[in-house]
Image (cartoon, rainbow, N blue to C red; front, side, top):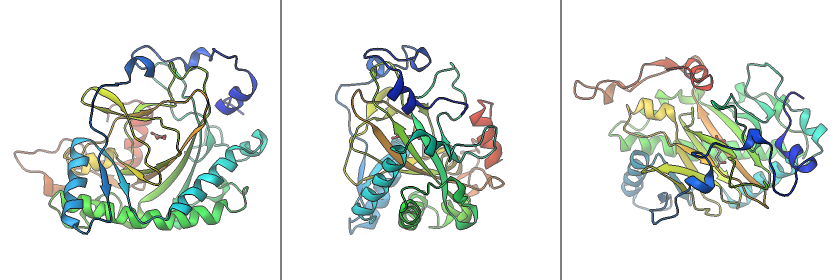
Length: 335
Ligand SMILES: O=C(O)CCC(=O)C(=O)O
């Protein structure tokens, strides 16, 4: 094992009030100093059971323009499926360390898939207070079952079912986001890779931390993806940067949290915003989350949609293969 897992550090070597220095963030990132507690509106909540579809489209477009994030209720994914997905993810992280290591991301491998503890290097060399498991869940041609846990035994069937359910919601989201830009319904999805869009599941595992005031579960970032659809467990921790403040996302049982990612910002020529976000951790409780990142295939070129570009609105982004965009972002190189 190249990197020590945060879960293993917590269960072996922590004293009541200390965490290793590589997890202590500089003051301008520490949640105790930088979290905003004044009055501020909540992240928009959108009800997909609203019979007025034009209203849903308007709310989605406004939220994507002003926030880059929204929560969806009555989305159609059965609540018991979400609970089962969460249960089996928790059971995986509760396995003995050696069993989890079977799925470890191979050292120096090009794939992002596998069990691990850090994606890329932080500019200031700091580590995230979290471990993760990444694996693709759709389309079938890009799934590598090597990274799907065999234990618990229902892991595969539950993830397959979740992939089918989440696809239905994603198709609606792309359609309504597209119409919200004044475009034909299929334009945004096609611009992000169409039926080739890859669904990358991540399970984030944030163990309890003796000093949640000093550290972050995941440091601030925008998502590389076109869009991310996430379910959290009941322990709050997601924060978004809005109007110069870090604010807490409210936990709504069963809701999906939709993040606009970089590729939709690019396609929309900046009309929709990729949301800057980060996570905090809890002193006593384990936080977990299940984002599904919707990514164009590596060779697919993403650029501002021609329909949204004119002499008054010149393209703000260079068209780029997704794999080149990812490489630059993960290695902190200019785009
Ligand atoms: O755990 C969360 O709520 C957000 C996770 C996240 O931002 C990420 O995994 O990139």
